[in-house]
Image (cartoon, rainbow, N blue to C red):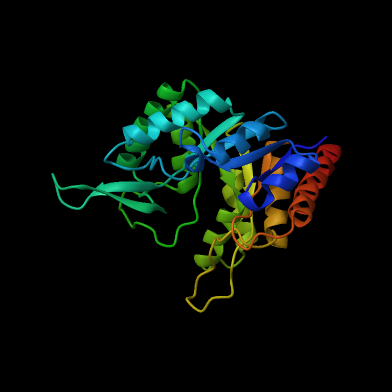
Length: 285
């Protein structure tokens, strides 16, 4: 029985809806469906008649001290009401801020890292709680790939920060294993896989509601690997995923592939591999 889904992207709309591959769910980016009508929304309506749908957002800016954009939240609430998704998620990041006190509100159009401090935690708890109250359901919050960190004297370990966020707001964690790996490599960990496994072990049991898997890009010359969702899942990430399954048990899993999209069969092959790992870990438990 499958527990894995794929990101439903425009290049695969027709083939997925026609061939109906065995998938536990499909995921779409919420903001792509905020319009009141149109072809994309019609496709989403067709998809939800065949599959459970997960709505994954990139624009709430849950860590923004400036708060949640009310228009964005209202459009998301209307989409949730229409789709009745199996899960709703966004990121532990910020996107909105004022350059000066009282100045205009700026939107970065990116997933900017937050400072893992008590003050940042209070902001995220407040914002996540506001979103959940409007949507009338818990959401999932994803750990991000970050290319800088705030060196605050009261910094909290990321895993402790995320655990506290879930405990205080009632949300769950969307654990992106690929992001763990990207951050470990960029931090120059002696053993990135071991660092990922330690992070997984530091999270409380029952906190993870979904897992993301993706590929990363390490071919650049900037000294960083980039979470670009443009290739197959790396072997070390599969190993960290198997460790997460042993820690958390069977967990809904998504294969993310957003750039350089392959043939659908390649994407489905990655999903089948995730299913085999889940079945193997269940059998060994």
